[in-house]
Length: 188
Image 1 (cartoon, rainbow, N blue to C red):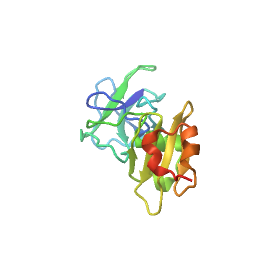
Image 2: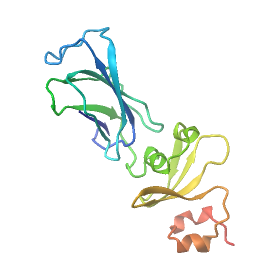
Image 3: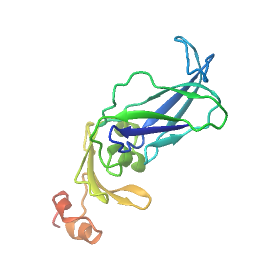
Image 4: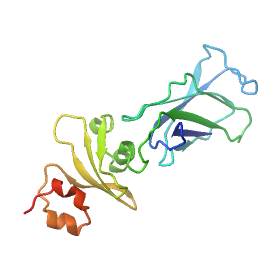
């Protein structure tokens, strides 16, 4: 089973925690799950950069939901039920978000994921500014200075500098920091 997280226009929303709940007894072939049917098993995952999470699950009736990621706006669509009628059947469940969505590479949840930020930051709303896919500034809505200049490499986002810092502009420029981020560095 594949779970997809995307906007109404189909733009992937990456790194969303998603949950499948298997309910029994039920009739997957009849697409019928009676109200009050108990949950017997839970499957948890996180969508990837393309907004997909893949699960190997048995035949059954599944409820699908997610943890809302700060900065996103889920579509209030009610219950999400998915039925797997036969072993190995390819089934897709969709969780949708309002448009517009940020570029998946520049989405705060992508940067959080790649940086492996601590829980106090991953659960907080973040603002990403000036993202060009290679460089960005991110700050979380938490007490204290959480702002960072980050860069995107082949292995994902990494912290270039956290604030406060003492990196001179000449060094930053040598490292490829774009001119538009000069205001975050000292002249030295």
